[in-house]
Image 1 (cartoon, one colour):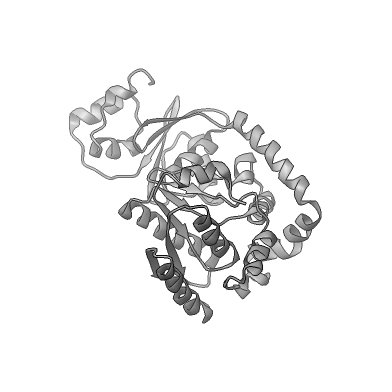
Image 2: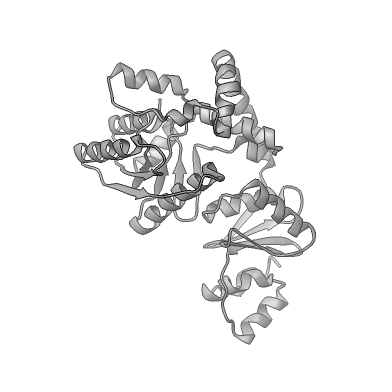
Length: 328
């Protein structure tokens, strides 16, 4: 079931599995163990269901039984835009663990049904090819890689795997309702469609992925955490990819805001974390840092037309500005 290229990468690095004890992550737990992949666990308790305490307790028991480290975080979120806040909370938690504990790969249990649900949600919002495809088996971030070894597997296959071996897992009842947008898409559209046409959808994703390669904007990783995207067609997709590598997943509103700024030749800060500078030939993407700079450094940046929004990080990181001479 597991993707062979992803499996090879996981066998050569330190891995953290994002765990919920639902069907997907529980099946992935046992599949990784059987494949000889070493990994630890991280789980988030959102405190919205009484059952979540049992899920965390069972996850702790499973980690102890298989001699694995487990990281647990308890959060309290507001009801407004819960899905978005929950996603941000867990990804921030996982990223923090990877950075602080030296995990090279964050393993996510997204499967084929998730990939198609994402496609439909983005289609409904009005998205381009990059956003429609969204989930990739391997996605390189600045401090770690995201691995999704189950993207070619249907959820029903994972359920059969667990039931066939009588393995314990939990069902989040909120996923069975249309209370949240993803649940609505799943119940009304994606699941019935895949039950009829899954093989054709898989083939279409293969064709789209091949097309996307030829359309992907060029990104230069000039130095650690410094990305340059050539101005022109597809530049906002390049910014989106650079932000992901810096640990920020842009919302549709943030992408639109960024596009407006770039069109007007203006710099912007996204999520309070990433500085996007509107250069004449290139877009600069770096972490956002406020820093007092020496006059000589500021003058060199001005001469090279490096956007002001990016200069604080370059100064703090002691970047050799000679790197930009030939490009700019």
